[in-house]
Length: 165
Image 1 (cartoon, rainbow, N blue to C red):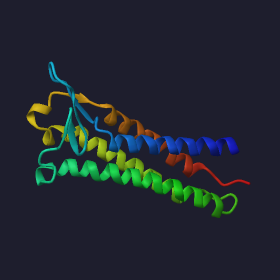
Image 2: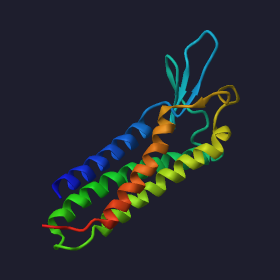
Image 3: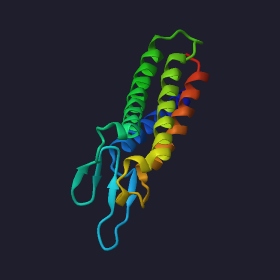
Image 4: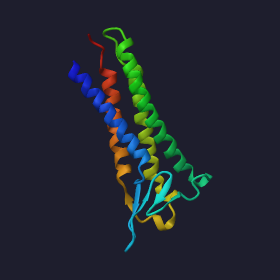
């Protein structure tokens, strides 16, 4: 039982780290430029040797980008909260009870990641400048999609898991 508990904790921590990296790192969209540095664009900045804010990110036209920002931050926060709730429930639940509250929070985090990455996929051309639209998805975008099934599986594990001695 201790091995399963350690695996679940490590899986949850790995999903949380992936969410942090996906949200913070500046490689959601990568634009190659002939003879110059790559331009990395994240949810807030576009960077090559210097960084500048994503243009019009505070306007109504960039509401999709703001939704991606909000859902990714919310997913990261929910994943952290669900870990602390799991630790609390580990000591507070009676024997044989399920970690339902932890599972619900983790499944909400999974939903937020899916919504954020889906919005970014569908609307990336609406908030990138025309000169930045000819690029490809970067590592942070891929990590966001990897963290979606990880948080989903983690939430389902918590739903099935019962507290034992």
